Image 1 (cartoon, one colour):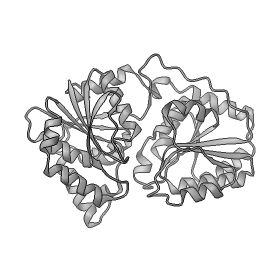
Image 2 (cartoon, helix red, strand yellow):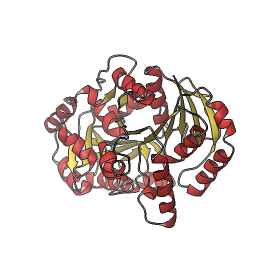
Image 3 (cartoon, rainbow, N blue to C red):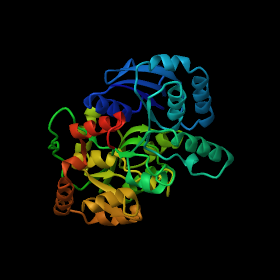
Image 4 (tube, rainbow, N blue to C red):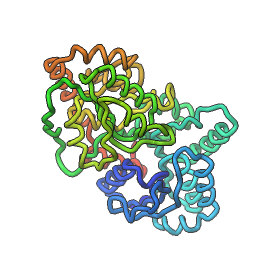
Length: 373
């Protein structure tokens, strides 16, 4: 069955993971999306790509104009999705375009995939309220909602969806569909120093400041390793902050196959996020939670948010409320025996809680096609 997958960023690694899940579930996707790079990829995981133009982070007006331009000239999109029985849209701007084309076709299923609740969907400004009205009108049209955290459902979507509207939870787990999953046996250097890793989408200015302060207070007993692509729209001083911080290293962007080598250098995973504090950051379950735990790196999380609740249910992780003083005091007295105990609790998390397997892919494919979600 052919799927038209509309995305807001062709360069997002999570798009490739979702394409892999679709293909493993027996679906045949084509990807239509905006890009952050100068040129679009030729394909994503074997799925052909239709370029909708270049957009930029944190430029809402520019992105709205790009959506409008494609909305007005939707014939090109309609031709590209000929024969697709499912239109799946990642993020609201993609849903607007998918719904536009779906309105011309009978029998097409419209699926909304939302993995972040943007601040505009919760604000009170004039533009915020306009965007919220647009989302509400499109929620009435979808056949299925896909989201990544139960807190997104309970705190945001359930009050907005029709009572009989189905929703599917697909957590941001490690992709492991090539064969039987097994935790990599990573040999870490004993601590101290204790190294905290912060990998992936780097968009939280407060996390950067806290990690730099932890490294400073540790005086060599605490180190920080950062890897990934920083959102300079949120952290314009990222390069300077990293350069001026003692005991903090930035490894740059990375490929997925480099993750074991990166995690081998860490003892802990920073699974704290203050981006859109009290809202999206309190509800999400970040990819690094699953990824770090899978690689045997003990997650550090806030105890009062959904990430902390996820770890508490599995009796794993370091849970804090005020990270800098609590972690500075904790790690000052940490030894190998204490770390081994924390690591054992993480290793006891069942693999299906951390890894997306073939069964997950089949469940996703069935839900997209109209089976039970």
